[in-house]
Image 1 (cartoon, helix red, strand yellow):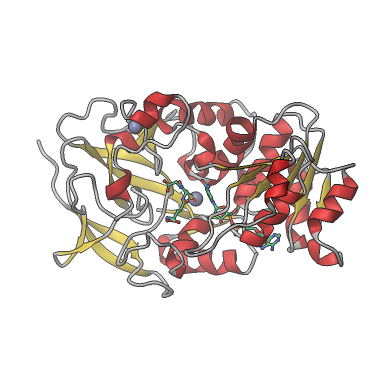
Image 2: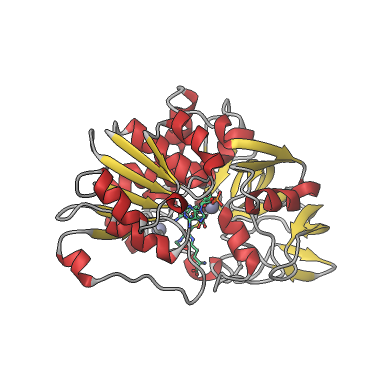
Length: 374
Ligand code: NAD
Ligand code: AHE
Ligand code: ZN
Ligand code: ZN
């Protein structure tokens, strides 16, 4: 029997710069090749705040934001075979179709099968599954997890171990996987390497965990909020530095501290000036800097080309280079095996009605991750 529309609560972003508003939305049944899921929990990532701020050139409104969720399949559309009702899934903003040029390349996780419509806030058929009084509400990053129910293409869900707590593994839907994957897949940090991590939010702290698991020799954690240092040290940072305590550029400080620079640096903030520092603190001849942070519309990075001529490398990464359907379930299993913890990240939990507090806490530097429990 085909599914019916569902009325449920969602946090709607009506326009850039305004708080989210809790509304009753109608969620249409999944069409062919789609699944509807009941969200159990969602994290709030800085990228949600970035888009809400109006800085995202792809931001469309009104929309339902959220991309770090965990849920249970409620119904499936025609032809769906890889997941079934009752399966536990993590929504993927980077899908994995397995058949596009990008998926087949073996060189990237950036499946492009539905990227064009996803970037416009639409499902692959060019329409939305969310509405209020018949007026469409846009999707976000193909996931829209700030809703009790959401609809996704089948290629945009990863089926995961049912024993894993969705209230914690939702963080593997973005932040934690991004940081850990950036270390393992993008930088390929090797044992004994010296690493610098700029920005100690959810992404930077997950990068530190990744660097520790890679057996990095030295992990230098950098933030202007010293309140982040205690957890950074607990997770594996060997040095914690506040750039505000120095009267010279932080890259010079780090180069002096490390006998010429670090082997790998990671920018986990979205600040183009820090991106330059992160590149320029790398060791001459081989140092690699990985951009993870997302910068606003119109912003550009710069450095002297000489920095690259003399062997430093600038790279970037999305979702840590992780292929969601084939590789994310393995991260859940590693978490279940006790290889790394997630509860350290969860500084706050709250119901959907209080989601604006999650944004406030993030902007005040008081949270690592707030997790919404449905
Ligand atoms: P967050 O707000 O929780 O953490 C950012 C941290 O940076 C904070 O601790 C803050 O104090 C610190 N910071 C700010 N300005 C600084 C400065 N000038 N110098 C040093 N530290 C500074 O954010 P988050 O959720 O960890 O996300 C970090 C960035 O990563 C954002 O830009 C987000 O959009 C991006 N992101 C990218 C991907 C990807 O796939 N590439 C995935 C997730 C998040
Ligand atoms: N819409 C923005 C780009 C935002 C962006 O880079 N997003 C990352 C994920 S951030 C998760 O917290 C990403 O996956 N990028 C690859 C992609 O295809 O979007 C803009 O600048 O237009
Ligand atoms: Zn994110
Ligand atoms: Zn693909």
